[in-house]
Image (cartoon, rainbow, N blue to C red; front, side, top):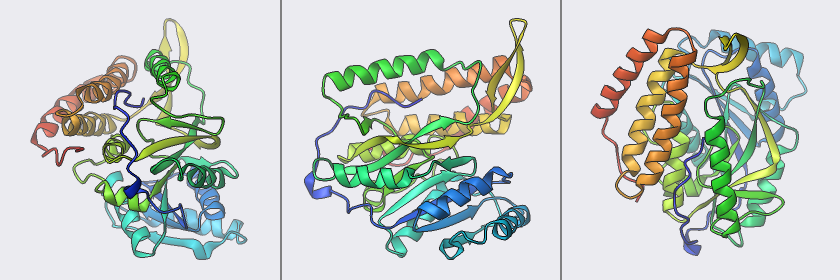
Length: 335
């Protein structure tokens, strides 16, 4: 769910980022499964370079996955691959910031953010780059997202109604011309990490990724700060990325078996903590955005407590997350 209530800001021509230029794909892994091979293969083919950042405490399994892929697909451009592993889980925000710093050091114009369970469709990056360049004369473009498609069709999702409301809000914004759209792109108010083509100069100007956040709300936070500085965010309608968010879990609901999206109690902790910290950062200047972020988070969290197992652990994780968010300095606001 995207935060819906940020006000569109005027374009600032003097802050226009460079053209997309060379693209460094930043693929973050943590105890990955076989799905990593598909995502890495697509990234190697489409990006100018790939940084595989492994947050796993033991990089051995990831090393074996990559070695197996190299044996099976020697034709891939393996000279584009750079691998780094800190030997511990430093979180998503720190990994993306490391990728952003690496891109700046090697003079890449953009970074492409990817999760281990996301795979670019053929030609997706080329389409995002094309739209970035096409929009640049008119807008200060901060980032272009691919359209995220679910790998697994869910049969029960607590956020379904909220997403319909979100799209209704967007439709009204398009009609009123507060946001831009055409047959190729739709302007959005926030970002989605997976499949994000992000301008390095724009991200640097916005302050990069927030060290206060570990796993969740990283995209909300950066999107808010980019827009506050006059950058516009777009979704490329014809660029697709297949993404498995969470772990599909089958539950019994109203006497029938239903497939839902599941997260561990540990992920619940980070979801509540990070989203709350992010909302605190934008509270003073944009309370409606903060409410939208929190509302989306709490609907999903309440649904997880009601529908998924380990209910007691989830409740304890929520309590700990709220306490943790109160102890975390919120960092600089978006403005």
